[in-house]
Image (cartoon, one colour):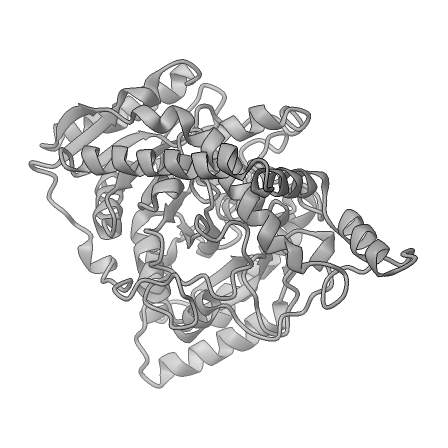
Length: 488
């Protein structure tokens, strides 16, 4: 098998057996990245010199007896994670020239495990989008069909994985931004329980919803990444004291007696029939392995999108107020006075979608509308959380589609923000509740586009859902398929 076709687990085994070196592996992938950039645009910046230096250090550590399974494995970071001495842009003109003076905790931990950073991945501006079309650095293209979107906001991460440019990537998920692009690109992505992965150094969009997580070819690969990424961080006030876990050790679970809930709200109007069939087939596979399938109700899921688009913009309007052109963000050259500097810098630095959400957020937080919108949305959020609590009293996990359709065409929804927002209808409730969820490939449409299954678990059931994803992938090959021309 060619190096670029191997996932984290296979590469770790090859490095351990000395079939190849970390330097050879990184060099091979850097060559693929150079060739693909114009066609896919998955990267904002590529750090060749740093990568080869880290790979050489990894080879030296391995020669000295270090047996960390991630040692020498290449990855790239979504360009929302601060990386010391490198550009961290958030896909925005506002931070196009920002050089971070420190590493995010996620970056630091994966680097400590010996992983090799190949660069920073393209994304929707400030993680606001569902298609990776809002990036200041241009849209990312889906390797399965380059006329289609890869999903967002972690579209660069998903596209790079699908194109076999790297075996692993980091992503962030505020309302589905790991799981939706994972489904569109036929890869695996985990949105962990809120607080299990540190947000320190991850530039904030909506602080009560944002969660970093791993993206890779398989659930087993994601588990290895979580072993290094997760755990309490004193630098993050939202980090959970019991966030660490033995994720890879939880694989290989017996499915006998597992109770799977299937929400009827996920299989109604608006769901593409091909997506519905592939997801139902995957759920029936679990039934064939001894799992019990039960219907569950999530009645307030219908309000999740509207609730999210009150709360997330409200938090964004607060978080993004720091970008004013005075300190480290874009500064307008045409301002007349200080007030004009603020106005012009923000207008020039932020794209239309970010400006739209800031305005919505400022509106719902204003004195005359706080109770009517923001407080009401928080109350509905509590009802959504309660729906999951009741469901998990009856079942172990909930399964359904990750997205209502396969990847849509570039530009198809750009002029209709509401239609774009509805692409996250099955993922947003998970963030509002703070529970973990996994997206993994479960089939293809007649057009050859990937379809994703979503597995949702109760708080701190991350190990369980990774184990269930791994069990399915041991008996299927959807996650091993690569786009025509990308696997060579």
